[in-house]
Image 1: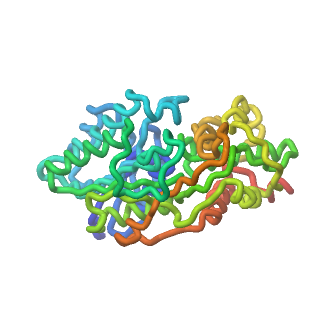
Image 2: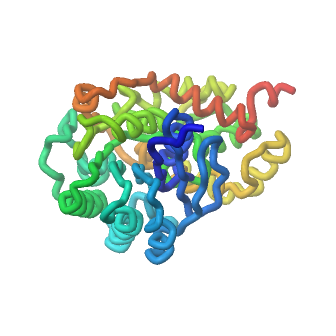
Length: 373
């Protein structure tokens, strides 16, 4: 039996990005994968699980300092205060915690004689201030000067650059994905489960699928599996060393324009828009969700929060709830990563069909066939 040449430590393996990365690296020949999460996880075939609280420095040191097999790290963990999504992004304590969590992983692995060769971390559109500026120049490019605002991205990036410069034994890549979509349950920043629950609660009331968001905005999405592919490329590509890359599907989308596709895959008619907060619409719906789980014998968690996390609040932010239009486009250029050698792309409408379809196939959401039965 051939010994794997590389071992990837996927940190934040229950999140929308980490879960996809763990699956992908575990499927690659010549790789082994370790998924790290605070909560217990069932790893996919070819991977192992490591339950670890990243805020516990002593525990991280004990678990990682003796590992001589970990050659690559994909750091996809993020600390969000309960109920502090969006507003908490500029909270100093939250920023400091995110820095310390990264330090607790990298410092035990970055040692003389260690096996570490590459680290990938995640940033995103907030690097360009999309969460605080009413408008950013289009398209946003990696070569721009750092946007002048406080952000844990900068704390993590500065730590990584300083540490790597001293070591010289490993390299890093910074990925800046646009709005991420995947199948992770309980994620703070995955709108898919929350939209699915909203849709089927309306279905049970005999209501069409009304778009709940605010004014239209030209935006970009990124499939979580595409991020995983990009991370695997960056792990070995010389052109990715110590570089920052924007990452998106390769097209643009407007929520209102893809809403009929979402309704179609969920098996529902499209209704007239009903602007409202998705978070408010799903608040106090625990009993209704339990009835849905029982009626369709779903494999989803009975605890609604365990299924959707803070995804409804995140959906409100991305769907422009409470904003007035017209809204400027938010577009990030992905030319740099394509010129560097990563060329994969995906049609965003196909992406929505894929993820909602997978939730139905796994029995986490009802299907139209079940509703007709």
